[in-house]
Image (cartoon, rainbow, N blue to C red; front, side):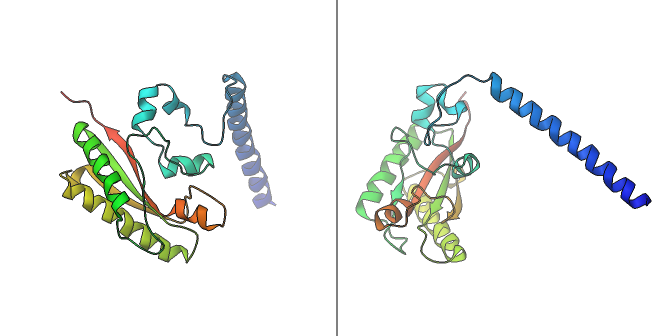
Length: 190
């Protein structure tokens, strides 16, 4: 009998805590400004300044937490590079984009960038994580060959878990075979 009493007390206490957290969240939501949010709208911290949006893309982790596609905005300073199916080779177009990304990084020497490797939905999760890691590493190596310090770049693979497009078509899969570049830290220059 004693065990049941403690069990009910735990449900009661944790239930009250959960209700108070939900009340705080709902009250915060009701006092927020009524701005429309679209599927690809940046988080509020990014939409405050047009200059910020031109510099920074939301990371795949931010996109996943918001439940939206991982898409680089058209005005982002660092653009994606795309790969052929099951490949880590950089085609000429990808090399040109990487050269432009390197030039931007040279003019912003305090920026640190996360290179995200992404894949399409074909193949196992494990295989695509490994392929995404290789794609991110190849892009990082190219930037280093262009004079960017390797200390400013980190790589991460999302495999097929953070797509830019969710349809199971070839047009969509092409959009998902990519490396993305996200500024994650920019220290003020002295």
